[in-house]
Image (cartoon, rainbow, N blue to C red; front, side, top):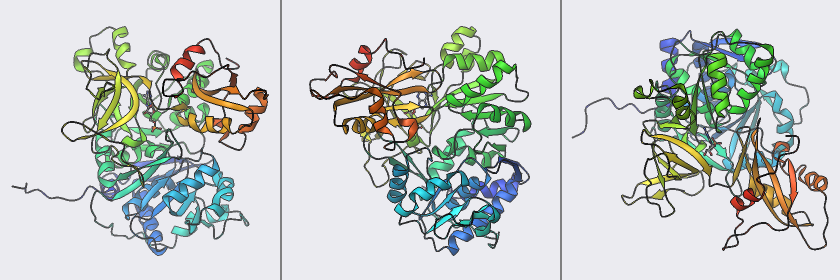
Length: 545
Ligand code: AMP
């Protein structure tokens, strides 16, 4: 027997419809690329999202066609979240920090039809547009008068001129909630990036869950500043949860330095912020010497990389701000665990609580997790046994876009997503990442594929073998170095080899150092043993530290 309740599909358009009807006057504040502060309301956001939907219809875009962005956090980007997905197209947020070659590859792989970009990225668009034959419309997210006369980008339109003639009336289409809504590429461990393709259902369920008290605890009383970029897993879903809760949203635009973020938090009375540890490192670095304090900030969710314990303490003791340590992945929409204490832990000593707060936290309803040994057998939740972390749930990836399913089947035939993280889980369900089995380095919250770095190094005629590993760094969390062996009789200096990387990968992905070694340790199957290499280089320090 089926239940007799209504069965409206869970669609992203329902979030913006709800926002307009129930908290239409809620504020959305953005620092623009132009440098000024822009303010409007959810009501304006909803109307302009509909104008955008009409512009996409007029453009002749079909259902599920991809519309890409190269954009900072701002109101026009948020309009695209709702206008593109709400009208049945797929929003493809591109990470502008990638190398132009990789961006062109991603655009072609996604077959993007329209690409909207902030003017900061005009040079990037000028560099890639000729290599992107699928894109039939380039749109600059600016006023018509801000568009330079001759950009070299054929048919370039201003976003404002594009949507201005469109009606703000639009009936959001109703369709299957499993329809694709947005996509985000993540640098895989090998070769080209892979895309997670989110659905309306996964996004809406994630938006509900993210707002829960033990998750991000978002409400209509909050003013939320997502520093985490809208091009990185939809700013952890905050734009959707914001529409659902009616919180005030404050977007930092391109000004991501500590001083600008601090000033925006104070000026807009922000109560809640979210970002990777590097951002907060910069902000605390700005605040501490100047003796600055927060007037309104109460909570900050920190994730994307391990949050250093000293940062949790500094926020708590020096600034009275609660840190919520979070863990997730692009493939997980992204939230998996959040670290909030349980009732029985509230009477523990500060030190005992601190030990818990350093962990990545407890699973959110909607995410099941387990740790397994090399045979795939589940390990106990004793806080000591560590193993590969696997997850499953309705907002977790099943199959990569145009790719394969990485899922591992259990005895009951249920698929588990292997995270590439190694973790412990304690008896209270708190997960702690202890290592990473995937061959990638995370610097300032962004991936560097060690395999890409090794491939470039090995393309140098003097290099016989190269192994790239991450080294701890106080600001960036990790920075890559490359250990190399040279071919017999060949010579190359550290500087020459570093120079060799120029133009072949994004500047920030170039290793900080080259270490010449006699041999790179290999395992029985001939695979590089990076754990052994790390042991060999345990006394190594990055230049300048
Ligand atoms: P991404 O797909 O770029 O969001 O990266 C996801 C990966 O970042 C995870 O699989 C972890 O390796 C790492 N990561 C994310 N959050 C944390 C955290 N709080 N602590 C340690 N590593 C993290």
